[in-house]
Image (tube, rainbow, N blue to C red):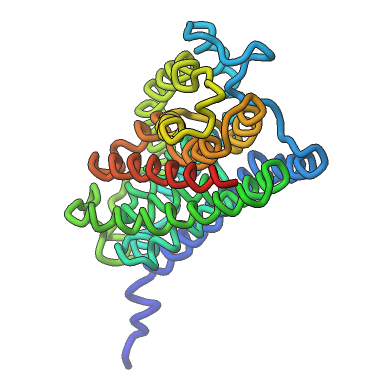
Length: 359
């Protein structure tokens, strides 16, 4: 009589599969709870505010009513405190999820879902980003975690940019505060960035392999034994925090101090000039802001005399990338790909500015 091979010869595989599914369910439960706390609930109430008041707050660039402060330690400190108070919840959730994805989600699953250089994989990465609604720096740890788990350049970048450029809550805020023209422009160019630029990045990085080879099967013996779940999670979390935090804090401080240089006082005669559009596109690409902060920045700068063209350039470039976020993902992408991303964002910002100047 033939023995039952499925039950008698592979008990470890059944146990491993049950453990794997438990880890996946735990990950998504924690992700939902964290995003509800940091994003979904606050944004629900902010949507009501935007609809009623046509504003979601004051510009983070300004210190009270005194305008943008001159470069100084006080300017650096005040901006950094305001910034980190705005992002700490999302940053905490992002760090936890980025470390958990490395220990709870099978790497082979991530590779099959997001590891291909085909457009379908990039599309999945962009769509998976939509519930997150994080700023570029908060999304960066998760992007690094995905790359460590063998996602492709395009799908990881689509997730990175999708969190910001196609943030559903921000698009709703923008509609109520800045109007449908800015909102439509942001959406269209966001789609180009999230799904077009990232697809080109896959081709640019086609000779770049991921950091570590994948196991060839789902069998538990193909996976290294790295200790208990808690040990592996704390190791992944600690490595991420200590490698990213110091440089992140320093660059935020530096940009906070340099606000007056990046966004100088404007001559009304140049309010809609091409060169001011270029300056704003570059400044917006370098500068770092919390989620949705581009809306009060644009609203306040238009009130101060900035033309709709440069304002549109800021609306595109401010949220999607920044110098700190580039530094946070510097090990996840080849240098030439990061340079391509930065230039692409600047170009899209200029295109937005030229279109916006027609509003």
